[in-house]
Structure formats: structure tokens, C-alpha cells
Length: 192
Image (cartoon, rainbow, N blue to C red; front, side, top):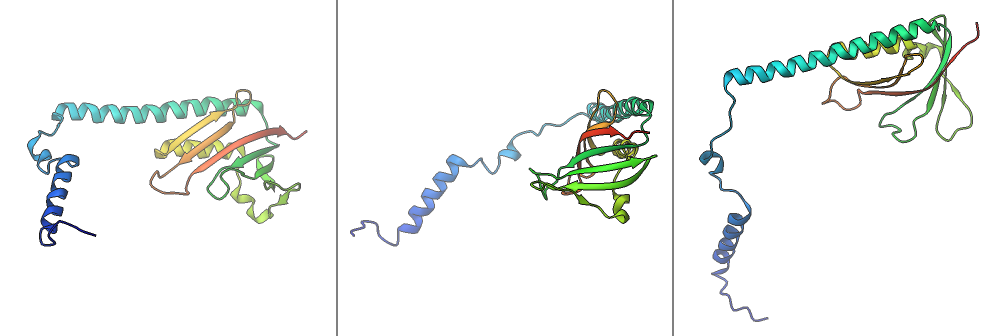
């Protein structure tokens, strides 16, 4: 192969090509120094910070007011014994969460069963683990604590009975795996 370039010229040609390319695609290294940065005046910065704080507090207050109204609707239904089912979404089974059935009698969890995806039968939870499952009243408390702590809270309530039908709580946006993401699929009263 006949290459007409002298091998001693190659590094200089290569450096010139690289320099020309950098000039085309990369901003000047002095661009930041040559332009004036955008800054807020102190009064304007204070107003903006206040608006963000008021917005956050208003969101918490609105969330708690809405929560309280739905909690009252739930209390008015006077259900102390019921079975509810939910799906909990997480990274361990993002597309096929098991359905969990929680039986509550007189305000206490007395039975928990899981139906894993693809199974035709239920798996019974051990009674020593019932403390890790919520009553619907405890779901309201969970949502309230999320609002009060400034967590990312998204909740949709059942129109008829008022319980949290879909809830998402993320207490730390920088932490993976601490989210609570539930969808209640049914609430059935237990005959008295």
C-alpha cells in the first residue's frame, strides 16, 4: 500500500484534525467565562422560595384534608370486620404481583393469604407475621404519615366507601426499594 504521507508528519496532521473537529462540535472553553450567568435578585429569590414552600405546605394540607374526608366516609361505613385484597407492586415482581387477601375482624388482622401469579391455590401466611399487614385504618395512617413527612404521596380513594384504593408512597426519592405501591382490588364485609 502506497501512503504518500511521511510518518513524521502524521502526529501533527492528526492533532490538527482533532483540533478542527473539537472546534466544530465542542463549545469554547471560555463560553461560561464570556457569558453572564443568570441570577435572581435577593427579593425575587425569596419570593420564589416562599412560593415553593407554600406550594409544598398546600399540597400536604390538601392531601390531609382529602384524606380526612375519605377517612370519615370509611368510618361512616362502620366496617370493622372485612376481607380486602391488594396487589403490591415492587421490583421483585413488577408485572405479576401476587394478590394478598387480608381478613380483619373487629379491627385486627386475623388471617392473610397470598395467591402468587400462575398458582391456582393460596399460600397461608404464618400468624406471627400478621403484624406486617395493614388494616384499612392503618392504610389511612400510612398515607397521613407520608403527607406529614413530606414523602411523595399519590393516592386515589374508593368513591363509595372512601378507603385508599390505590396508593404510592416514596419516603426517599434517592433510595430504591423503599416505595409502597398498592392497589386494593376488593373490600368485602364479613357478615355480622
